[in-house]
Image 1 (cartoon, rainbow, N blue to C red):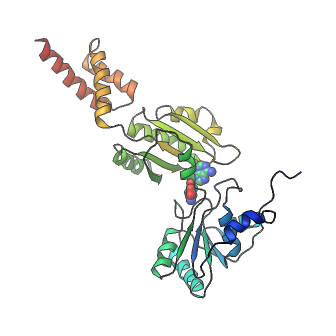
Image 2: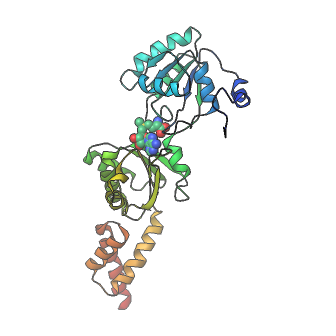
Length: 306
Ligand code: SAM
């Protein structure tokens, strides 16, 4: 018993949706492919992959394997990080001969933390059309299930791998008002979440999106302070591919008001130093900043007592 017709041969009426459109020759088609689940490909992407004369691929072996799963076989050109400019010349030559060429990366949307952007530039500079075909990306997949703490967002992608450079990059982002989206590899996931908590404080919301669209998909929402502990509690939580979504910096006035209220309560019982220490533990904010603030509040309190 077939619950759903098979792609593409048994779906003529759906194939027609893509078939009826115009696909110019001498054009580069930028095609998104799945980020894990092989079924996450659009009807138009399948149609174009079937139509083009060749496919420019980040890794030709991966792409050949993927195309086979859709019953498609095409000549492939390797276009990766290290040869994008020179390979672009070959692609342009084929396009000038009237071919249609698809550009795909290993997974998801080309140009999003993946090769593709330089090829797009070169084709456009050559005066030839670039046609984008939307589809899967780890960025949008994580964001669509992140929840309301996101609102506006900025995409950062991969942070520097060296701890010092990563910390300095994060310091620059600490007051960014929008949610931030990071990509990360499994062997750095704990260090990176810890670095995020160090740079931004522990209070902000964090989404740890792992193995999206795959068998072991998991989406865990917690605070930045809780993130590294949660990951370390089970080695399986550190396996696979990750997107991290971090809440944007609180509006300075809101955060300051909340810290002032907490410090004022603590100062009723504690010294300035202890109040700052306890507030830093509770909020994850910088102890030095809280100390300066507590000092001001204590002095203000003294002057109103007189
Ligand atoms: N072009 C891709 C896109 O559109 O998302 C991104 C390619 S980038 C080289 C690979 C990174 O994307 C991974 O290290 C991971 O951070 C993220 N990623 C890709 N697939 C993922 C998945 N299924 N689940 C979670 N993150 C994923």
